[in-house]
Length: 290
Image (cartoon, rainbow, N blue to C red; front, side, top):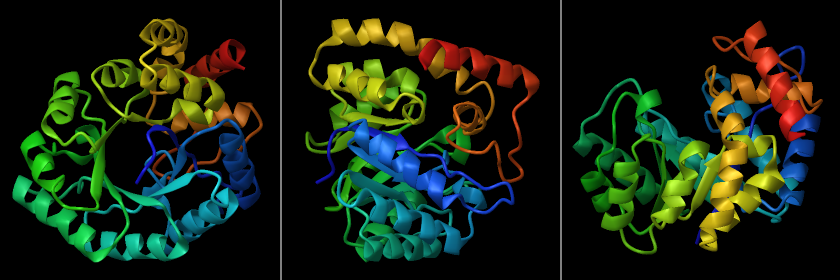
């Protein structure tokens, strides 16, 4: 069973020549584990998965599993808008030893609710590891409705959802409509407080790339129902939550990490370096949160 708590949607660092920086990636993984994260999401949107080749995708997941060495959970981002491709990627992650798989709602081709149900069920039926569905309408163009998710929750190895619809109402509907053991993670740092107050199970975070220890504590406050402390910390963290999305993720977080000396400021097109304004804001964020 997947643990509750904080998972970091980790970046994929690149060398100046554009290849994957394995040394930097290993250091980042070790830092996350030392901070006490429940798990790491490898090859999510924060990890620039759309521009990784299949070989690179497999390698990053395998490296993450080997480097973690069982010290935290590895949730492999192996979704696709092609069901066959998603099955292939997920099977590789399973063989490599991933604890679970994150499956994004199919993007661009805009399937119906029935199509999404059949897509996720086909993946779950093909691969015997726990699956977390990733609902993010802003990136996929379609919303997985709660009624569809309820049916998917009946599939034995579909165990949770990363809710990034941006709708607190939908998040609460999901918590109320799904079984008690169905995990509901926030996909937005900014909405973690209300989600956990409503009975959610954790956060898949961008901000924890920057301040993993504080984000672990922030989520733990919620899981322990200490919402007085969580509200206080939320007020302190809100500027970071907001500014990490002033440009498309992961541009701000990777820029900030490069300023901290954790990676190069290297992206793969069509993502590119941050604007001068964003760079200035990230420098201010380091002064606030270092």
